[in-house]
Image (cartoon, rainbow, N blue to C red; front, top):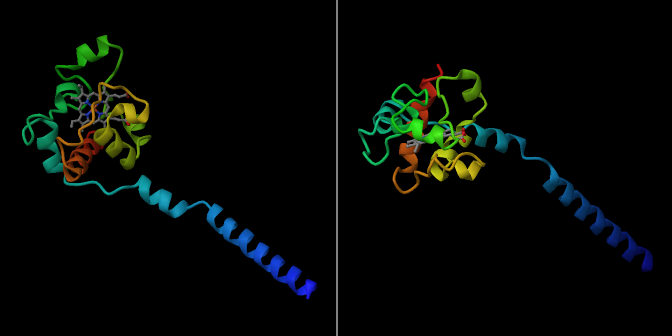
Length: 142
Ligand code: HEC
């Protein structure tokens, strides 16, 4: 009787350990997919970037029509110690995943420990518009 109880307890223990090991396994494919979020329509993104589709959201004000970070507001931002990212810099832009770019635009630079001058655009741009403008930004480094 006692032996059987010990045996079933042991079986339960083995099952618990197995489940825990399963949960601890890193979700590699899911993480990779998240890092490679699909972007939107770059043509619509250009209109947003340049402040023509949504006048409240001119990215070019700081980032410049050129994407080099030389917009009208850039000098003031540099004087305050921040530098709008140069979107034509392939090496720098290659380090930023689509997911990170979307987060920076949606939730602002501060959400990634970057400059607060990169303000959050959530509520001004829709999630779809953010993917469009991110697709346009990618073209600068091509
Ligand atoms: C008021 C100035 C300003 C405006 C307007 C602005 N940005 Fe930025 N943005 C910045 C600054 C400054 C940074 C650099 C943040 C850093 O690296 O610390 C930045 C960084 C970024 C980055 C790179 C984030 C990263 O992970 O390095 C993206 C993408 C971006 N901006 C997109 C946009 C888009 C899209 C818009 C328009 C909807 C926009 N920005 C409008 C100032 C601005």
